[in-house]
Image (cartoon, rainbow, N blue to C red; front, side, top):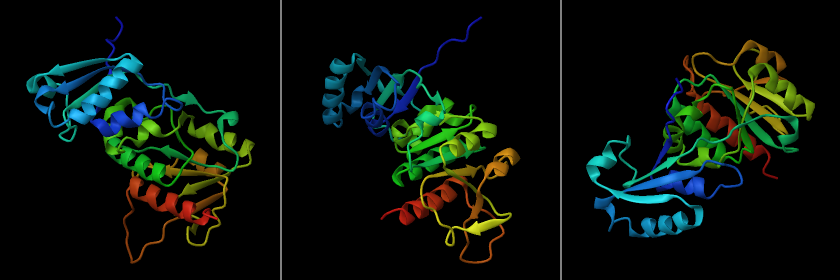
Length: 251
């Protein structure tokens, strides 16, 4: 018996606007939009925008009761707007898709979609050209990730690739492969981060797989301001690393 198709639900105008503004990156389609009928007056501008987009893109608009709306909504900051959408195509990575002299990030082993979404938000803000994900990843929870990333997960170019292969593909196009870690590492404040770079960030529990570490040209670490035996969250480490790379490549 085939599994019943479940649409992706994007909540709020931030996520929805991000999708609508990224047709060249993201092929996710809106099927219909629900508006909480108690928000008609408060959301008049957004409703006007969505009505125009519905005519342009061919999706339906429905005003529903607050009770019906809340049977689907999971967050409390959606402003009374939900969009039921198709899945997004995330292509397998190939060397031909990689920009010359760019900055990409491979994210491996993150355990939580909110942490993952927060990391995507920082990477997008730091100008990352694309994020590469393992075949099993948190985009199966796209609605949660979109909220946590302030919609940037819908704008970010995404690819999939196995940990065993990703370093080899980037080396084919003369990228440096840098892994975030501690053992045999160089401080990010002493490292030359000139592009092109693939930066690999692992989850707090599982870290980065051994085969991928073997492909690394260098292991880099974030130095702390005091003695600290713990570690940064993956999303915090992603932000620190990405903005240091951005700073060094400003000129």
